[in-house]
Length: 469
Image 1 (cartoon, rainbow, N blue to C red):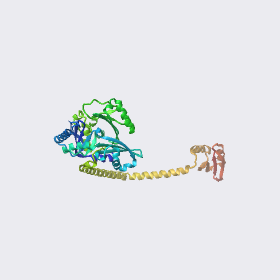
Image 2: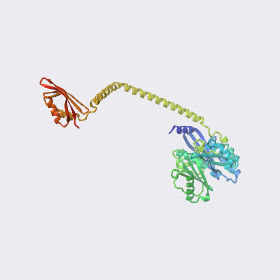
Image 3: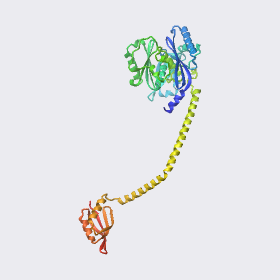
Image 4: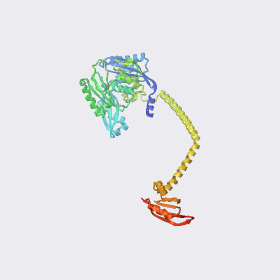
């Protein structure tokens, strides 16, 4: 784990509870989670039917009652609540802007919002996701939802004393769940989410929502329809199909099974080993619970997809920095790091002292070895000087001289330099030595280098010969 990853992980450590609420067309799903340091557990879930949108008063009352009963009976902390809404209630628009717009992107979109969405700015809640397209362009995915739709949900929740800190889409909530289970926030993934009347195909890459297409139910009959739509989106976003795992989910009970796509994976099985949850959750028959769980993960700061349709001024500290608990944890971690660093330093000093003592104990032997090494180097230099320019066949040469020189003669000096042999010595007849050397094919131009002198019964000589090649 890198220092940056450790910092991000520590930033999320806390002791908090969270509530996720998903309001579907015909039901409300709730999920309560608890985070203790790094461990997240699912406390409880519930799904309650709701009247349709054509009965607004009854729907508001039922929603408020369901949320109030769930939070009261489970003693749920409602201070950290996230709301998930269906994708069908939101509108999307893709915008290409110059890369320079990134510095003031929020202001640019606020200024241009009415040219991009066919509703007045004061009548919508919106958020956006941006990514670079090369060096010169910026792609912005603009997401918005009518204020009156959101306000109806907020009013009903306010009747239960619940005030959400964030509003997300069902698809981004499920993407947060998948990122949490997979432990890969930046890896690409594809979602196929079927709700009554429509199917959403969403793509995420780099931890961001990059594409979302809503297909009417009448168009989604054969698997090939989804495959073609998915292929177009992958091509538009320059994503390779083999690199994008697919996840399919049914957001409502009672619908016919959707077409099976190649390569799709099981969602609930991913939570095993990552999320502490009752076994009943893994066999849950309430599909609307999954986006509620994703919203609850956002509530406990485990969400990674940066989408929040609630206006920033109404988020009630959603984007706050380190919590008090996290600060304490970071402080304790810093203390542990200091202790660990101090112990490592002390251990290093001890090892240094031991190594120094061992070096001192072998210092006499080291000095002796160094003296021997210096003597070897000196002798080697002398040997190099003596052998410089000499033929490496000196041994055969000495052997030949031994055979050629008479037994009654002896040499006092022998020198071989530059292919010339100089011999000094005594013999009964110095001229016999010249004759013997000239007969050898090894020597040529044998001459006396100085006059011979008589010493007793022998002649002192000094002669020179060239080596034949």
